[in-house]
Amino acid sequence: MKDEKNYHGMGLGTIAIHAGQRPDPTTGAIMMPVYQTSTYVQPELGRHLGYEYARTHNPTREAFEGNVAALESGTHGIAFASGLAATDTMLKLMSAGDHVICGEGVYGGTYRLFSKVLARMGIEFTFVDSADTEALRAAITPRTKLIHLETPTNPMMQLTDIAAAAEVARAAGALLSVDNTFASPYNQRPLELGADIVIHSVTKYVNGHSDMVGGMIVVKDDGLHEQLRFLQNAAGGIPGPWDCWLGLRGTKTLHLRMKAHNENGQRIAEWLDAHPKVEAVYYPGLPHHPQHELAKRQMRGFTGMVSIEMGTLEKAAAFVNKVRIFALAESLGGVESLIGHPALMTHASVPRDLRYAMGLTDGLVRLSCGVEDVEDLIADLEQALEHA
Ligand SMILES: *Cc1c(COP(=O)(O)O)cnc(C)c1O
Image 1 (tube, rainbow, N blue to C red):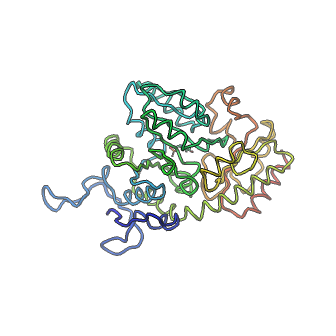
Image 2 (cartoon, rainbow, N blue to C red):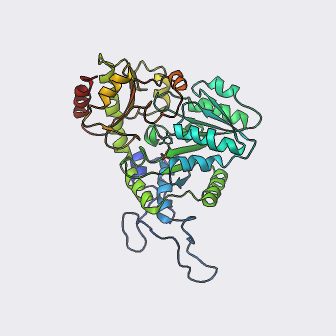
Image 3 (tube, rainbow, N blue to C red):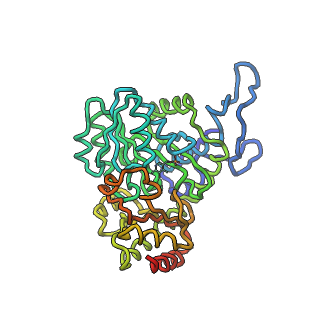
C-alpha cells in the first residue's frame, strides 16, 4: 500500500495531511485503518500480496513511515517502538572498532545507551561540544564512521550548525545523524542541510498528544535505507499498528500545532525575559541568545521549549510546585503545557559538576509551552512566580 503520489514542492500542511496515505482500497475509508494483525493469508504457495509477517511489513506502519519521511524531505522512514530503539538500531550500522563522535548535549538516554551499553560492544565514542565545528573536526579519527548530534539541545537550547557539521562529516567519509526531536520537521529539516540521517522521538512534537511512545529514522539514500530496513527487521524494535495510527493522526495537525507552539514559546520567553524573578532565559528566538543568527538561518520557528534560571533550588521548587495549568511532568512537545526541573528529573543521573559545566544548575526550570491560550499560560506563570 505504498503511496504513489509525489508531494514534492507542496507545502508542509498538505504533506502532513496526505503524504504516505491513500483511501483504503476495499472500502474507500479515508483514514488509514489500524491493521491489527500479525500475519497475512497467502493466496497460494509462493505467492503473497506483499505482506507476509507483521514485524517486516504493516500497512499502518508504512503509512506513518511515508508520512514522516515526506515531512523531513526524506525518501524513506523507518519506524520504531521508541526514539531510543531508533537510535539503537541506527548505531547497529557500526561495527566493533568503529568510532562515533557525539554531541555533548544529547538526550540523557542517548548518552546512557552510547556510554553504558554500546561502548561495551567495542564501538568507541567521543563526546564533544558540537556547537564548536572545530571541535567536531578535531575529534575525527581514521575510524570515525558517524557524527551524531542534537540541535537545539535539551535543556540549554544550544544550537549546532548542521550544514557545517555535514561538511565535517562528508570530508571524513562519515555519516551525519541529527536528532530532530526538539525542533520537529516543521521548524528544521536536517536532510536539506546535508545530514544523512534524521532521528525522532515521535513521542514528542511529531505525535504531539502525549498518548504514545515511538521513534523514527528518516533517510534520503536508497542504500542506507536498505541497510536500516534490514536492521529494523533483524533486530525487531518495531512499533505496534495502533501507535502508528496515533502518530499519523498526530502529524495531520503538525503544522497547526507547531505554529501555535512557536508563537506561545516566543511570547512566554519574552515575558519571562522581562520578569524580575527570572535570572536568565534560554530560547533561540530571543535576540540575546548567542546563536540567534544561526537559529534564524536553519530554523523556521523556535518551538515551545523554554528554559529559565531561577537562581536556587528553593526558588525553582517553589515555582514549579505552584503552577496550575502547566503540569509537572517529564517529556515535552504535547498540546498541553508541561514544566520540569531537569536537575532532579530528566538529568538526575548526570553528575553535579558535569551538569554545572553545561549550565544545568539546580535553579534551572524547563517549560514545554503547549497550545493553550497564551494569556492563560502567562497568568499561570505569573501567579506561580509570586511564590518563588
Ligand atoms: C525523548 C527523547 C528521546 C528518546 O525518545 P523515547 O521515545 O523516549 O525513547 C531522544 N531524543 C530526544 C531529544 C528526546 O527528547
